[in-house]
Image 1 (spheres, rainbow, N blue to C red):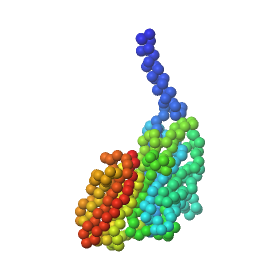
Image 2: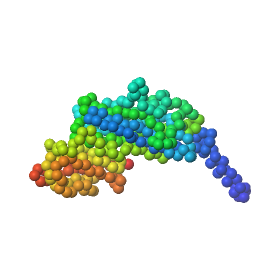
Image 3: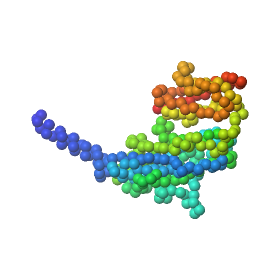
Image 4: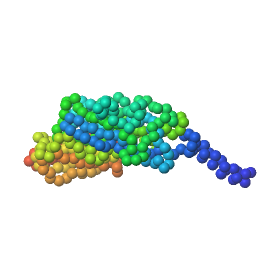
Length: 306
């Protein structure tokens, strides 16, 4: 009996493996991987435009038929200049949206809720009818978008921070891409498999108005951005006069865990990045202390989510 089991065991393993591999369709399933990039941006004091591209990155292993997709971005709320953000498609002279996707697969109904920008495809083409994502260059252009404000112009002297929300800890409000993996199945490549989301790094320093010669009129400590964050967030502050600056991070018990800045700085606008990779999820506080000709103190709360 033992000898019979030893003979049958390899056959059982092989049969199980074949059935598992075929669970996603008629052939052995390997998940598609991709690179999602926000790029080709232009900005003025009253408008910011950008392209969303998706590129298939493992074509040697599998095809990539795009199914559902949604995109969420956060923009610095201080830019609204007292108005509300607007979010719409960029179109050509014929009024057509700028996209490489067939019309029925393009994202629909862009919306802005506060500083959260949403874009999603509201219909699926059906299994086996997904769009084959390009593998060359930047890939397939999903769409070109424009951000504005009802105030007419963005706030001057405010950095144009722009982030893609792409962590599953943010409920349903995160960027994700689905692909058809068989005749009747889809897979969320964001959650289950490898993915690569990029917002071109230079976006984090865009300022729609040149402010190199403008000095702040008062002290300020801005809310960190993004918040919640994982694992890096940016803290900005303004000095109307020079002074000795200390920017410290504290945990929920009030224990200092990091001193981000400890030096004399001239008047100006500054930012510092806090990396929470070595710390546990939870509530933290950051405190700005300025001493010198004038003094200033301010504390704000932030949340690290992993």
